[in-house]
Amino acid sequence: MKIPFNKPWFTGQEPRHMQMAALFGQISGNGAFTKKCHRFFEQRLKTRKALLTTSCSDALEMSAILSNVGPGDEVILPSFTFVSTANAFALRGAKLVFADVEPGYPNLDPKAVAKLITPATRAVVVVHYAGVACQMDEFVGLAEKHNLWLIEDAAHAIGASYRRRPLGSIGHMATFSFHETKNIICGEGGLLAVNDKRLMQRAEIIWEKGTNRAAFYRGEVNKYGWVDVGSSFLPSELIAAFLYAQLEAFDDIQKERIRVRRSYLDKLAFVEANSWAQIPRLPEYASDNGNMFFMVTNSINHRDALLKHLGRDGIHAVFHYLPLHSSQHGTLLHDGRELPNTDRFSQCIIRLPFFSGLTEAEVDSVARSIRKFYEKQTR
Ligand SMILES: *Cc1c(COP(=O)(O)O)cnc(C)c1O
Image (cartoon, rainbow, N blue to C red; front, side, top):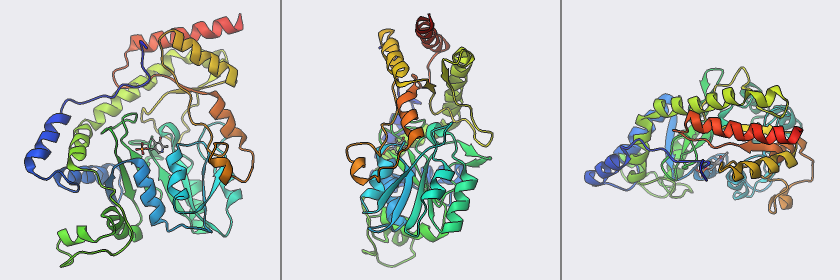
């Protein structure tokens, strides 16, 4: 491929920070770099408590443990998401209730969610697709009215906001990913943001394998032991050191990715002008964090043909999310309701190459290839 879909971007400081962590002599978790990362996120995300995890999947599993769901409890979530959003709650034995996304944007639809709430509902998980905020006032309203946990899967959403509030600071808990396909990366890594005071202490215990070791190290208790369930959710200092190098360049990384997104918007305006495909606009309450660029084609046939056409031009574009409710495992769990918006986005979304350092010339050549494709179609 001449233009790959993703290319991880490094600041150049990552190896130096990792070497520093090794020289400090503590490379297990919760050391100096982990604490620096926590402070950064607590300030930037305006969250009460940040806990680095080994992945967003792990942070989601922590959120499922913290929400205390089990057999007999229902959790409402989108079908249009990554498997980890669902796995976390399936692993607790909760019943998954898949809700449809909005007709105009692949974010969970609060009206669809409202209709699915029953006395057994315990939690709602929203996913801010491509870093674009869900309608959080509506979801907070539903959570308050029905006494539900509200969890933000903010894997795409670092640095984005809803009505000027950072995403990840609005739900009771939120999860982030630093997988190499996201904005800020450390290979594999994630974060749990705890915004509800009632959950802070237990979150730390679950993170530390069910022990009160963190409180012990702070001198709050004189011995530590097994006080709850938990697991090994914390990454090593080597990972935290790598991540911290990325955090030092946070604003530059975000600015660069927003440049790439604006460049696509600008150079692909003809696609919408000709009604060849749609490029969903940001709602007035959402900000852009340069997470990705996608178009919604008019049919699955157009989408598949365009993917092939771009591939022949050396451009690696991809589709996104096979719906969970109709997946091999999901059909065993789903109640059979149709989710038409989910199906349409799954069939028609095409994601274009997106990474820091994608040049204007490269965006031009993607745009040229797309124009060529549609001109051939309409001839
Ligand atoms: C990437 C992603 C995850 C999983 O992140 P990992 O850090 O790879 O575990 C979860 N949810 C969504 C929406 C994602 O895009």
